[in-house]
Figure 1 (cartoon, rainbow, N blue to C red):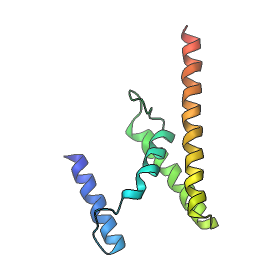
Figure 2 (cartoon, rainbow, N blue to C red):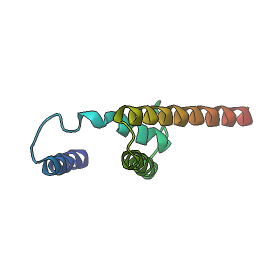
Figure 3 (cartoon, helix red, strand yellow):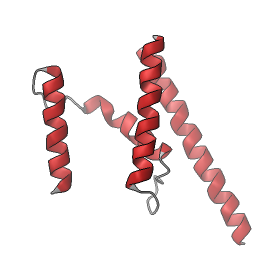
Length: 105
């Protein structure tokens, strides 16, 4: 119920912002969403993570995206920067897990 209410609210906010309702309004936001979740520390394989960490990741990605827009960076480069951020976040997570595994063994 909460997920449906949040999705409905997001749809209303997006339609209000654009002035038109369209089923494809949020289709370009999936990559930014996944990046925010991974930067927040949620494992792609599942099992660890949480809402507060994801909110911090979303805040960081939003600040990065807004900063790149203010600087005037091309949208293709902005996506590339998000790609680099997600690769670095995944590499850091894998490195941390391997380090913990070695300590435990």
